[in-house]
Image (cartoon, rainbow, N blue to C red):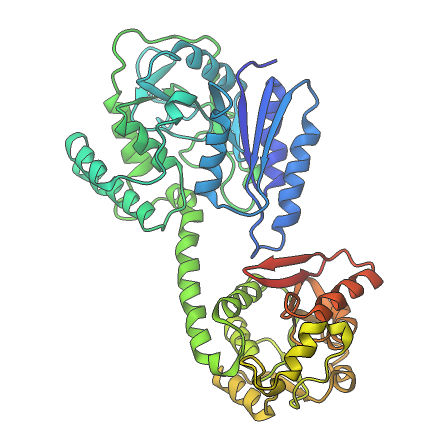
Length: 515
C-alpha cells in the first residue's frame, strides 16, 4: 500500500484511462481522489465517454482504499476544472501526487515524489516536484534530481501550503517586472506572449499560472535526473505511441531506485533550464510539433471564437425571417455544427419564413438536402392537451408574440433559402398529416428540427421522421420548454417506442441524440 494521497484527473478518454490507471493500481494508494470534468454539450459522445471513464476507474479499484470523487455534471474546461479539482484535493490532504489521464508514470515516480515530499515538507522554498525530464540524457549534477524554475506538470506533487499560493489570474505588471530582472530577451518575449494569451483567453490553462505563482513566491521546482512519466495524450492514436519526439520514452527511462539527496543551497541549475527553454519551450520562428500538440486544446478556443462571430453574422442575415431570439438561434447553429459529420438530410417541420433552416444551411453547406415543411397558413387550433397557456396565446391575437398565428408565405421561405445561396432544398406546403409522407423514402436525416408547437404536430413528426434519423443525428425541439403539449408529445413518443434517447439542453435549446 502507498501512503501518499493521489489525485487522478479524467475526462472523456477511456482508452487512456485503461492504460494510465493501471500504474496507480500497481502501487495501491490508501487515499485516491478522482476529479472528472463534465461532458461538453456540443459533443454528443461526451456523455457516454465521460460516464465510461468514471465507471471504469471505480471498477478497477480492487484494493482497500479511501475513495473521494469530484464528478462534474457540466463542462468547466481545462483551466477551471483542473485547478479547482487540485484545490479540492489539497483542501483535504497535506501533500499529494497529481496525475492526469494521459500520464503513464514509472513505478519509481511514486516513491520519488513521496520521499521528496517528506524530505522538503518544512521547506517553503520548494513548491513543486515533477516527474518530467527533458534533458535528452544530460545528467545535471550528482543527485537524483536538480532544482529548476520550470514546473513541468505531466505527473507531479506538492504540498497544500504551496498550492494555496496558486493564482488563476495573471498579475501581468508583476510578471513583466520579474521577467525583466531574471530572464533573457527571448525568454521575456516568450513568457510575455504566454501571459497575454492567458489574459485574452486564447489559452484555457492552469499550469502556466501555477508556474508563474511559483515564481512570484520565489519558489523552486524539483526535476528528476531521468524521465519518470511518459505522456501518451498526443494524437488520435497516441494510446499506442512508443516515442514522442523529445518528450521521453518510459521504456527507455531508467528508474530512480535509491534517492541521492542534494546538500547545500537549492541553486537553480541554469544550464539545464537554458537547455529546456531552447529545446522544449522556445520555438523560433515556428512552434515545434510538440508545442503545437500541447497548445492544441487552447488553439481550439480561437476557432470557437471565430465560429461564433460567423454565426452572429448569419443571425443578422436572417433575423427578419425568424422569430427565434439571438441566443437560441446561435445555440441551434452550434448544435447543427456539432453533428456536421453525421450523414443525412436536414428536415425542419414548422418553417415559418425559413430563417432558421437558412442559417443551418449556411453552416452545413449546399451539399446537403434541405426539406422545409409548413402549412403556410399559420398554426392549427391548439387543444386542451397543449395547455392553458397555449390556448390563451392563440386567443390573444394582439399579443406581441402572436405573429399572425405564425402565418407566412411560401415565398418568404424561398427568399430566405435563396439569400443563403442554397439550391438543394424542397418546400412541402400543407398540413403535416398530408405532406410528411412526401419525404423521399430512400433519404435519411442528420438533423430534424421540430417547430410545430402543439402535441399533435410534434408527435406526428416524431413518428414519421425519428426512425429516419441516423445514429449520431439530433432532433431539436423548439417548443419543448414553451408549450405543455410539445413536451408531452416528446415524452409520449419516447415511451411508446421505448427509445433510449435522452432529452438534453444546450443554452436553452432542447434536443435528442439518436443512439
